Length: 91
Image 1 (cartoon, one colour):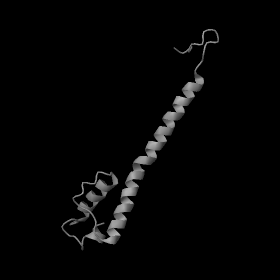
Image 2 (cartoon, rainbow, N blue to C red):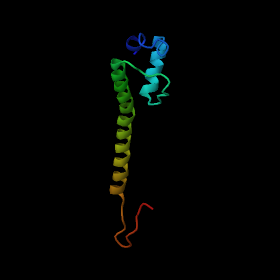
Image 3 (tube, helix red, strand yellow):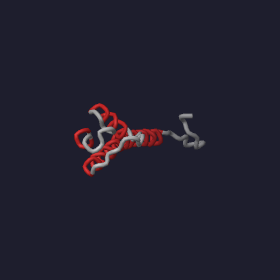
């Protein structure tokens, strides 16, 4: 982002380190809003980085949710019910 935006707004992206700070804030979806790209290529790259940031959280969350759902279902399948009284034997 530094090489794309520095010439257009040197006060917002004064160094590579500050551009990396912006990228981390965008990837983690914090996005304070104090620094943002203004060039078309910078906006495109910013949008791409934001989508990557969302994907970094959505993909693991889906995997975890699927794992929890599978575990709950397998516990339900293993449940034993007494044929005489109808109560759960695992209680």
